Image 1 (tube, rainbow, N blue to C red):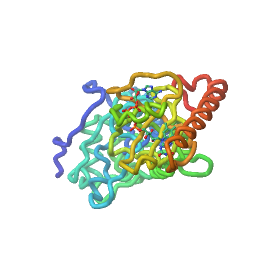
Image 2: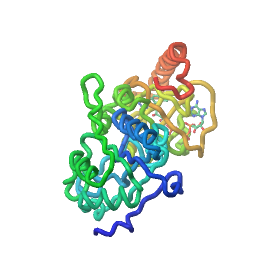
Image 3: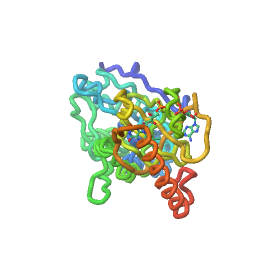
Image 4: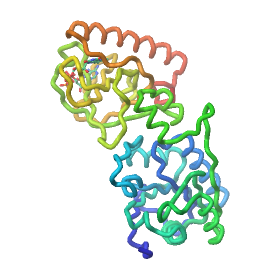
Length: 324
Ligand SMILES: Cc1cc2nc3c(=O)[nH]c(=O)nc-3n(C[C@H](O)[C@H](O)[C@H](O)COP(=O)(O)O)c2cc1C
Ligand SMILES: Nc1ncnc2c1ncn2[C@@H]1O[C@H](COP(=O)(O)OP(=O)(O)O)[C@@H](O)[C@H]1O
């Protein structure tokens, strides 16, 4: 397919202002981590210099789902709506979401740049990460992008890898940390706590009987959940304990995310709530009886109260959504 007029592009906000030239920050951007944030900052700076608009171009579904359909699907750090919001928060004035399919994946690199970037996005400059690949068989690399861009008169910037404590920041590294329950490390690479959002649904009412009601959150099934464990967390900014488990004490079932707000009794059913994971507290255990479980939850709650008392003292912005 060399006619790209039919390639689907959704804009956020919906109507791009017509005629304005754009500087396009391009990538899958899952996680919108420190490396992605550096790309967005470069695009914003370039846009200001060239009096253009900073646009983030991202792909949905995740390209790996399309190019490797038989492999297990990658679990996302940021479902699309979160990703779009974060791209805007970190500097994109508009976000363009390219409907990624086999035809887009098969475009020649030159066609992608001239027809998608230049014709559809009115691009006058492009910014990508050092390891960006695109086009047929991922034959386009950052170097190819620079080469084609220069031929077409585009300003091109390639952002080198961002490192933290000697490690290159990457979505797959963050995914591994989240999966292992290392949410603090993941948060450092993201530049903010790892967040999972979803609707609060009714459970079996057991939590309330135990004296510790828990809001059951139903996340997007395509999002990576932290590994099983009890975590210090914020639920819509409220200090909380988040539990990821199969509830082994009551006979293992499906994996759930549930959250106990440590002070107060907010009414949460039906609401869309966000859980920010701050720190791993302990692994899940199978208790021999309900009394032991309740005693342990009491200890967990004490530790949470202590943590939040000292954290808010040291970092007053904690409860206003400041990074921890
Ligand atoms: C802070 C906290 C820690 C918990 N830890 C465990 C645990 O280690 N093992 C376990 O089987 N259940 C644990 N639970 C209990 C269950 O996950 C769950 O809260 C209880 O079964 C209530 O379920 P319900 O939502 O159906 O009412 C914990 C609950 C809380 C609030
Ligand atoms: N401190 C609290 N933390 C979490 N949820 C609370 C809290 N206080 C009240 N709730 C409410 O109680 C509900 C959970 O009660 P629970 O008995 O565990 O119910 P169920 O398992 O049936 O959802 C939550 O969805 C929320 O609306």
